[in-house]
Image (cartoon, rainbow, N blue to C red; front, side, top):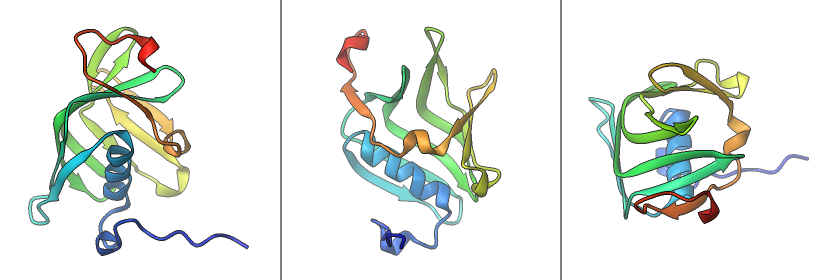
Length: 141
């Protein structure tokens, strides 16, 4: 028999699943001071208590600025600001996060030069988090 999973944000349950995934990723990543969603414009804003790095799987490291914004629609967060991912020792801004088919379990990250397809299951466990420092050291994780 399967376990019943309750939403940690029951009042937000009618919102798109991508919104809930993003909020949960950010909550797991670091301290979220506030978040807001303008339902008419779709602008999602998340304010963290400080910028940080998060390691989600293997050696994948993401940088969260203190303020993260994007335009939320069903299955997509576009025009993302305040989030970057390290690729081959270069920090690339994450411009969008897309879920075209929720049943596929695949999340598509638009990093400008390319799209990176990742399994949603890679984000099941909370990431390891390190505060922003002048130079990130892999040993912080």
